[in-house]
Image 1 (cartoon, rainbow, N blue to C red):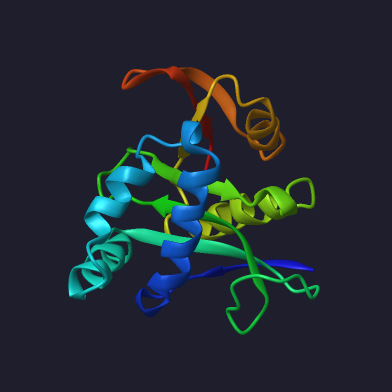
Image 2 (image 1 turned 180 degrees about the horizontal axis):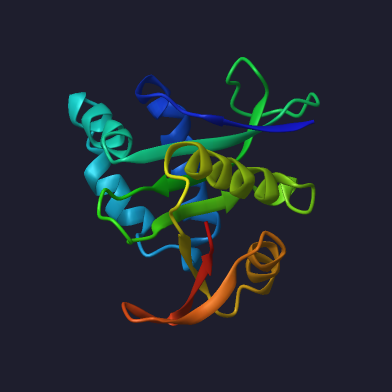
Length: 173
């Protein structure tokens, strides 16, 4: 069974573990790099926690998808984290919210994890910002991700002006 949950600031170690794994296994999917994340991560002292808690200071929510079928991995008390996503909201009227940092662990792909993460982002946005569009950027050659987003109601609206290898996709409120 797969469920998505919002992480609290105290859950930063779970977010950190997933983010570092994502940057290690699928570096081409992110604008950041493992090296940059590790440099900001520090030597394990208080700067590590400060850096990772920073993800939770931004408006919106951080989500993980949890698989609770006895798989091995990082334990959250409710199952094994199978993926992650970040919803970034804005207070500027008319501006879309943004989905960032979507990643599903390879062993969990094809089982509805990505769909659960996107549904959690859409649901959170509908509950807290009901008239807001939702946007994301996806590497053009990442066909599985594009199919997922299209099946969740996103359509291509153009190229990402900040990265020519990416397409911008949007979903209406």
